[in-house]
Image (cartoon, rainbow, N blue to C red; front, side, top):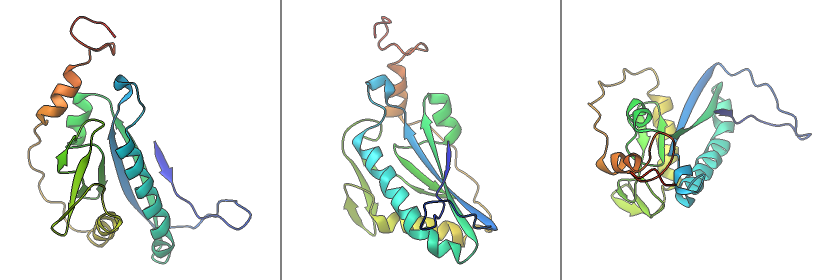
Amino acid sequence: MVEKINQQCECGTDVQTGHQRTLRVQFLELDMTHQGAASCNTCMSVENQVRQVIADLQPVFDQVDTVIEMEKTLIKSLEQAEDFHFAASPTIRVGNREVVPFQGDLFGFGARQWEWQREVYEAPPIALIVDAILRAYASENEEIPESHSYQSPEALKNFFSNFSKDGSTGVCGCS
């Protein structure tokens, strides 16, 4: 799912802005439908923060002919997690920059923590998201460093090992 956050005129109609550049913000989140929920409160809150930051920054980026697009991906399997080098839920990725929780329940419904300027927060500070977007824009033409090898976190492996291919929980096939 790719969502473009467009400007609107006073009548509510989308305005074509003719942007020359696109800055893509990826929002990666663990699919929690196996747990009986579409998402967790933390992911929903962070997604809303990202949407608000994009809406706030878009008028500035209009001045440099750039549109910010948000792409949301639900991680539904360990294979998909490995393809995306998914380290925690939620992950905000802009260019080669990531905003991810570093501690807490990284793949569940519990609390998580983010670090910003040597302080620890229960939610990613708006400034951290803004900084990631601005740095990604500024370094867009720089070479992306060689990516390190990805190892699926044990907690993620455990999360997916609790579900069979047909979506049932446990090894007995019960749901």
